[in-house]
Length: 339
Image (cartoon, rainbow, N blue to C red; front, top):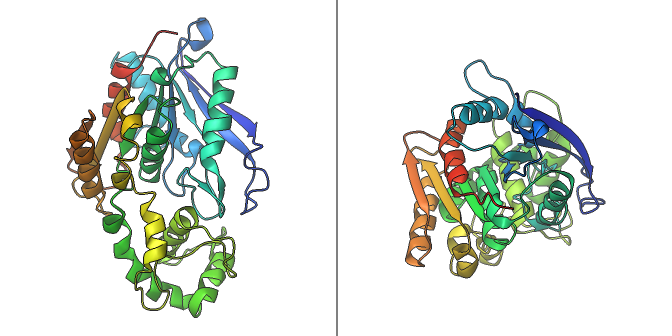
């Protein structure tokens, strides 16, 4: 028996007429374990969400010296390290690089897209165990952030939460890039018109991209999610700092902090206590200082009487998909397998 990965076109009502005019019909990849097509049994489901500038199909990328998600899951199942499960890989990419899996007036309602459309569609269409205890949300980087955000807000949808190097402790992972941004954006002009010019001239397929492309895009992407502003004339979000001096703008920065997982533990304490699994890890050499956020998040969970598993490993932020060997084992051990 062999596994199967199916690509479906999901027609979204939630994403229709989104602010960026991104496609509302999205490719949805689903991994079915080897026994799925030969049995009538139901399976737990993992929702694997992607990092910034990523989307579901990229999990299937082939590489000479590493496994894609199908190869990894097949190996883990064959070696009996994990139980069989369905893995859903959605597309939440936006023109600005990503959605952070939140509802935003600048990008679209991607939280609603997953919670109100994708999860119900998968449960209705396939042989899942349609219970929170048999449903996990997992991601890396911005996907890890999305796992924390969705897990703590929707424990009746996702009963397991796994975050690999997820964005948290915003003052450590984002603020260090503010001074660089104000210098880099000057290449495109002065003031807010420079940001508009970058959006119009660089967010396309033209290559090569300038060296500063990712840092500028990341700041645009995060601002569009955490501080959207439809009234902004040049674009539809607020930057959390002065575009010339990089001085923090407290009223905007405070809007960002309302999305910071380490600042949300107390607010969602009762929700977090409902989860069957909270798994957190990060490399000690993470280039975005996310090991600090992981430590703070785990510490706050424990101080609030919430059980979690927190691990560190000797690596950075990139190419750490091998950590899925660890987290999928944790999910397999904590799933509810009864319908």
